[in-house]
Length: 176
Image (tube, rainbow, N blue to C red; front, side, top):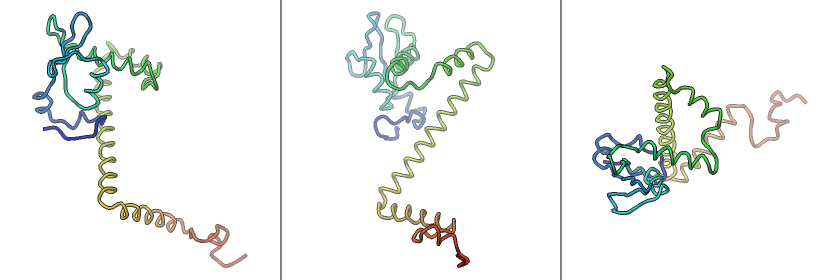
């Protein structure tokens, strides 16, 4: 069973292992470099593969000649295209550091730490979005009232009356 999320949500961590395996789409890459989606019986572009990722559709890319799993190379192609245009996620220094880890005994440690870090960030992002959505959708007036109350509490804790000019608010002894 998949959890329904908006298109484009980075939600791969929210699927169960069983769902990921039972609903995997197979894409075949032919020698002419074309990608064939076996579920839709049509050729697709790399941009459409990216859209599968963005909509959290699990897939596997296999070489049509030997059935070898080449998903990673396709994902790297998509990353290269993304990095080439717009705002890159990785700067040159970071990429050089990644390269230095290949063959290093700490390679698997780095890989695990990066995966855990991404998982944590995605969980936090989802939790924040859920909190905001539930607060906003439940009762927008109550949401803004609570925000206003929190603001007033903040000012009270500073012992500043937001209704008075700063010169009189800080002069509590009555001296001039």
